[in-house]
Picture 1 (cartoon, helix red, strand yellow):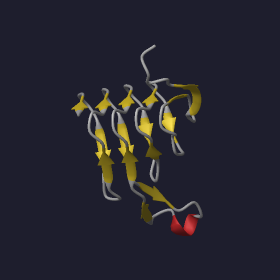
Picture 2 (cartoon, rainbow, N blue to C red; picture 1 turned 90 degrees about the horizontal axis):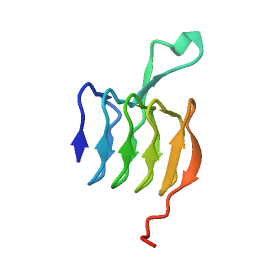
Picture 3 (spheres, rainbow, N blue to C red; picture 1 turned 30 degrees about the vertical axis):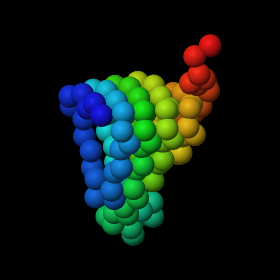
Picture 4 (spheres, rainbow, N blue to C red; picture 1 turned 120 degrees about the vertical axis):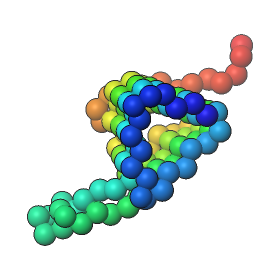
Amino acid sequence: MFFNTGCSFQDRGGIQIGDGTMIGMNVTIATLNHGLPKETRNITYPSPVMIGENVWIGSNATILPGVTIGDNSVVAAGAVVTKDVPENTVVAGVPARVIKEINNHLE
């Protein structure tokens, strides 16, 4: 695994990171969320983040609570990941969306 500088991991909900994963500068991983109604906005709810093996998370990406990122996937710099990422895909944007599938076989 490789972690670059300036990362912020809020891990009360639990974070699992697979072997071979690379995490760029200033990546944020959050595992707590607040309620939406004003009565519950001061209550936090934990949800784990699961990151597979050989994942590459680009600089300034944000991974939100409850997200699973599949093996061999790439999260583009600056992406905000709000839902699960399938294995062998590239996601980008705010919110992050699949933009490409990755072929992991040499041709």
